[in-house]
Image 1 (spheres, rainbow, N blue to C red):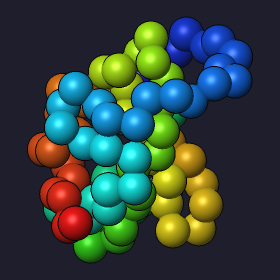
Image 2: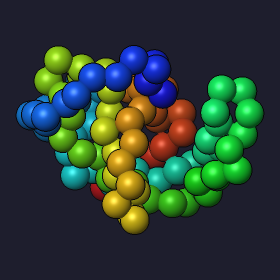
Image 3: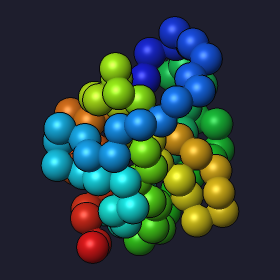
Image 4: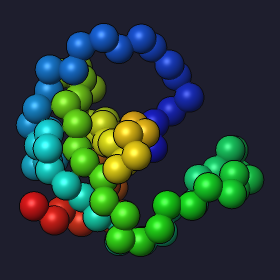
Length: 90
């Protein structure tokens, strides 16, 4: 995922990511995601089979994929390894 550096983002004009994903593409988790705070698991686990949707991204950060879970929660993911954890279903 992303580093711990934060900045305010107000424009999401990137619809087609260089890695081949586009806004609106649905992805299915293919291996369980265990969230962590540092090295310690938080207890939050996203199960295999859950479907997330690719969102518009930030033009000057095309390597960061914006995603939305079915419940509306948004996340970011590194484009380099997104297809290690997710598979396209569209």
